[in-house]
Length: 163
Image 1 (tube, rainbow, N blue to C red):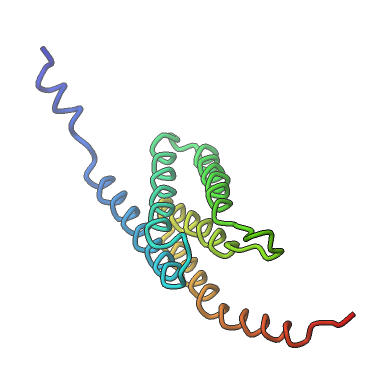
Image 2 (cartoon, rainbow, N blue to C red):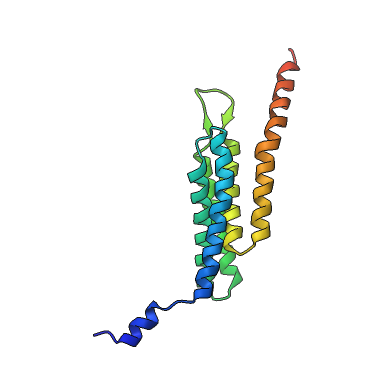
């Protein structure tokens, strides 16, 4: 029979760490939802839930890396590299070429998925200001630069070089 003291020690955890981890995960969810909501409102295939899951997953991998690194910063950087590379493959799934058209679609959404991973990783590392700044920068690119990008496309169509 398992001793009661052994069982109790196995069930105990550090409340401070639990609260800190919960705050980091909540921030990743919040920031991922902000960018994901913009993508969904823009009618993109990867929207709210995708961006939240990417940010949350990145934060979880980062927290797990911190918890198991034993103070070895090199181990944590390896986790960050793995997240960045792995999410790059996920973002590649958002990139499409339609009906043999020369125009490639989904690059911005793929980029936003990658940035959501960076925001989640930053939140997981406890770099709250960096995570929030990245979210603000992402929204700036996605919302404000969308209008400028459309104007540039319209200008380019009106001023196409003629052979």
